[in-house]
Length: 321
Ligand code: AVJ
Image 1 (tube, rainbow, N blue to C red):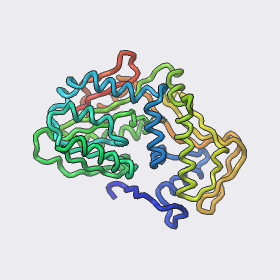
Image 2 (tube, rainbow, N blue to C red):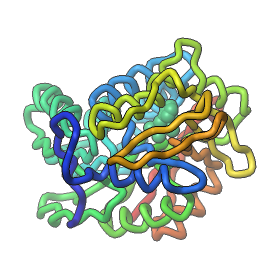
Image 3 (cartoon, rainbow, N blue to C red):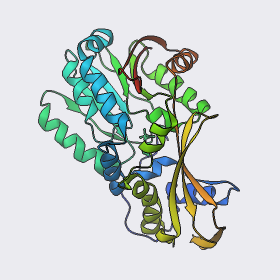
Image 4 (cartoon, rainbow, N blue to C red):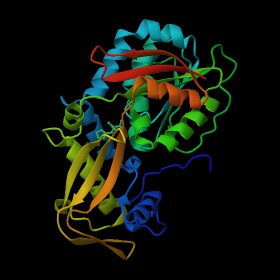
C-alpha cells in the first residue's frame, strides 16, 4: 500500500490484530519497551494534544504562531505563488490558516493526518472559512512513502507545510529519509518547516511536565486507548508519566513508568513489567538552526530563509526543493 489508512474501529476485542496492536505487541516484546508516538492521536489524544498547545509551559505552538504571524509577508515572498499546499501531520488545521491567508491564490489544500475523525471535523471547519479552497483530507500515516498525483497545471505548483516540530518525533535517520521523500514530492516547490530549538533544559523540562498534568494525561491516554481498542488490561494507576531531556541525544524522552511489578495481557500473551521499568512512548528531538540546514541539504533541499523568535526558542525554515 502507498500508505496505511486508519479507519475508526469498533470496540475490542478485534480478530485481526490492528496496526496499533501489532506494534504494541512488538514494542512490549523488546527488552527496552517502546511504542510509536503516532498512537497517541485517537480522538481523546488529539483533544489532549490541543490542550497541551494552549498550556502556559508549552511554548512551541504559541512561539511558532508568533513567528508565522510576524513574518507572514516575507514568508509569502519566499514561498511565492503556490496552488497546492500539502501538510504533514495536520492535526487541528489552525496554523495553516496563517499560511493560507498569506499565500496569493492557494487552490488545493491536502492535510494528511493519521487521526481520521479529528481531521474530517477540522476540514469541515476550514471549508466553511475558505470557500474558494478545495480541502482534501488524506487519512494516512505520513511516515510511509506517499504518492500524490501531479499538482496540476495551475501556476506555482506544490509546497509542503510541516509545522510544530513534528519532525522531532523521528530518529535522525528517519528524519533524513522523511525529508528525502518530501523533497521528491515537492520538487520545484519547497517545504515550510517548523522545528524546536535546543535551549535551557529547564524550559524544555517544564514544557513536557506541565503543572496541570495535561501532558501526563496525554501520555497515559495511550494505555487507555489500548484497553479500549485492544482489550489490554493496563492498570492506569499502575503507571506514571516521566519526561526528561536527554542532552547527548538532543531530545526530550517521554516514558510510562511502571509503579510496581505487574503484568499486562495482549492477545492472550502476558508481559511482565518490573517496578520502575518503562515503556518509551516518545522522542522529541531538538535542533540547532545549522544542524537542521545541514540535514536539509543532505535530503536534497536548498535551505534559504530562517525565521526565529527573539528568544530563539523555535525556528521556521523555507527549504527549496
Ligand atoms: C507534536 C511531536 C511536536 O514533541 O512537542 C507534546 C508532542 N508530546 N507534549 C512535541 C508532544 C508531549 C509534540 N509534537
